[in-house]
Length: 130
Image (cartoon, helix red, strand yellow):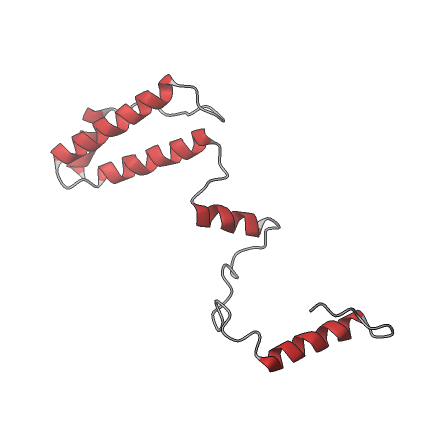
């Protein structure tokens, strides 16, 4: 692919020829993902798709830390509500409250955290009903 485009040849036909020759040589065989559908082809196009994929692969977030923490706290509350025993529910809610207290005591980057400690007794009552 270090060849220069010859004069008088259109750029498109020159590129097409190089692709065809590379295909004939088998240079596209055994590429990762060969024969598989394109990832995220059913998602709407976003101009920063490559950045989103990189963040996902690296386990990073594009959200501010306060919103990440808020999401984690909501997920922890949902997980606590699925506890099989009341003792485990109380333990998970106490751990969640300690995380919330710690987050409220220190400044958080981004928008306000917007969460308050969980009312354990109210959650236990709801858990018993369901």
